[in-house]
Length: 289
Image (cartoon, rainbow, N blue to C red):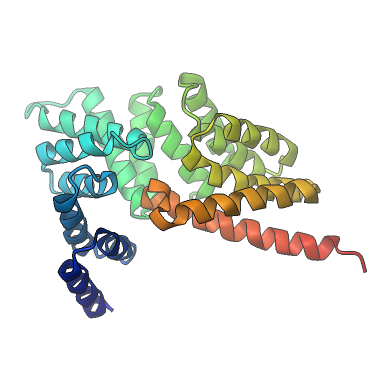
């Protein structure tokens, strides 16, 4: 499999087409072949220095290598794209703090940013246990660290056992919204947590609020989760309407993943599968004999 992937990478590099390189780079990341992915994204960046996704991926790679200055330059570019802005600005701050860190001691702020970065890096690679440990530590050091709360609550409400904890996710997401009402992603997390707790009517209200306030890249999540909440609340018509909107969004954004980090795209794929299965089952149950 790795040999086949290397062959495809060589072919993509020979052809030099950014979309082919992007496809192979994403596939390499999903397979854990991160070095191969970086080769592809580096070539995209060479051809198009302003490419946000390539800059984001190369920034992550530079942080992994502790090359703070290079990471900073990549995240500056990635943060110019609204789809990568939130996480790129966090990682940009982490790179700057790491670059200026004292050899004698780290200030608490620097430590918090380090734990945030490491937590996100683990999350994006599917290593949920270490991600929660890092983000928990960031919140322990700074209870008002909004991004750590946002990431931590999302992991808790989407992770399998033993990390799943919808009650704690709900509390952390509400704290994130209270600290920074301008950010809409934790509103979606509140709705999802309520859905997982079986509070379907409350979940619908929260998710509808998230749709109204949210950026385009978050609407796919909200519509798929609204499909689930509406179906489980017994509202077949609303569920069908939300699924239709979600599938339209999917067709418009799946080619480039909507500019999402790997962890978010994986969650969206799972949410889509769950919503579609729920509607098939709901339609079968609702169909008269």
